[in-house]
Image (cartoon, rainbow, N blue to C red):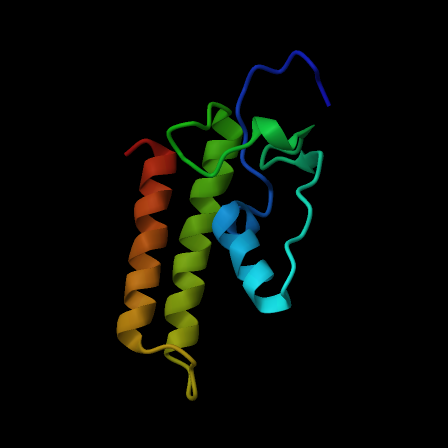
Length: 112
């Protein structure tokens, strides 16, 4: 972990980062998990949790932006693929919305 790294990063597990995920866990389990002090970023560095963001406009580390873009695109493909399976817990319309949300976020991370 570098104390002089001025960049804002994303967590390596970008789909499990941020307040929305923590709220999901809290509502499911009845208690909120503690935020870690240090996390592994998408670029592979160990950085303070305070130097991470889930907002594409805030992330300044290029490697982390690329990582987040790939992860959101992978999520979109996975949601669409799983929604086509028999007995899928989400409808095709719900999956399409979730996939579009992930692709929009991926585009924001890519700067497109």
